Length: 447
Image 1 (cartoon, rainbow, N blue to C red):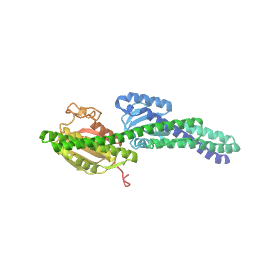
Image 2 (cartoon, one colour; image 1 turned 180 degrees about the vertical axis):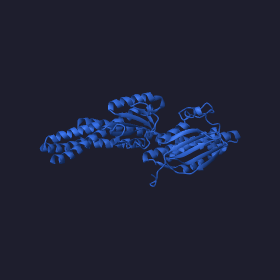
Image 3 (cartoon, rainbow, N blue to C red; image 1 turned 120 degrees about the vertical axis):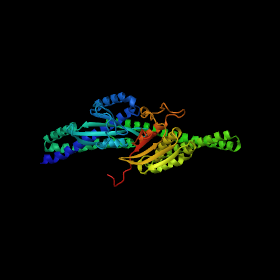
Image 4 (cartoon, one colour; image 1 turned 135 degrees about the vertical axis):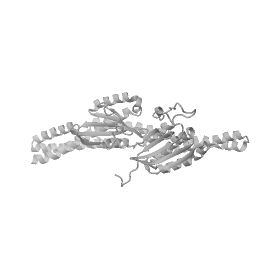
């Protein structure tokens, strides 16, 4: 009875220690794989390289490694290609749902297929603070359970005195190992969630753990410097552009008051409007830079965003022979208001320029998502080109001269930044419908 009474807490403690070590190791390994994948290898043209990275990583970590995109669609699997293209962030894998939302997570659950407990660890793949995918590692817990059982039986066999001494030693070792590992895991989770100040510093423990913490802090320092430099560049560039834009507008206004030539006046007025548009873009960049520093809102009313877009573009639409209409109901979606404003600006700019006439902005809820769609009645986009028009710098075969081929690409990237998606569809009766689907903001009464 005494041996059992002493052996049970010892077994529990050893199991907790082994599990914590495995969780920490898996979290660090997943962070390393996510860094190796990066944004470049998620592109469709690099899938073979991505598959090679995943297979090598699986051999190193001794488990299964998968990579999904920002929507949870499986892009690479170390166990083969059978499930590629399936939705893996569908609620059945909570750790992967959390990683796609930008939070590292891990859990232990029973696998019916393998008949054993698995440790599942997932971390986000981020680019400039935006979650663009996730890496998940799964490892069987059978080895940990077997080692714990062997250690427990061996200690119990030593007898009452040996068990008592082993218990005291186990508690001490568990504390000495678990404390630095716990701090390291906590810092990794904070950094993965966007806290660039997360550091481990000195935690004590084995030399290997000290070396690992130094490497982690050096990586965090480099990441923080890179992100801060990018933020400062956006803020400084936007601020520096204000002065020449103000001077340009004053010169145009002065020229307008002095000229009597109708054609010159028309050109000057057009230039003045373009300067106003450029000033709005610069102001939006400044707002975005401040939001990044202060913490940006993550909810937006899609109906209000549509009304704001009409107010911004109504005058330009009228001049080019277009009419803007808003249909549907509002609703709150998971996105930053500035990002949704920019998405609508890009979609309306294209529609007004290339398909003047009646342009409809539709908002509302569609199934499990919030929808913001812009539909025109123009010539439409050929079905063979609809998937490519959202690529950077791609211009369709029927596109008129001008434009950069970036508007739809930027809109798609902003939608994916918030876990959404952008689709280019044909519209019934002719024209194009560009649909942006975002995640809804759930209320306390919703399941």
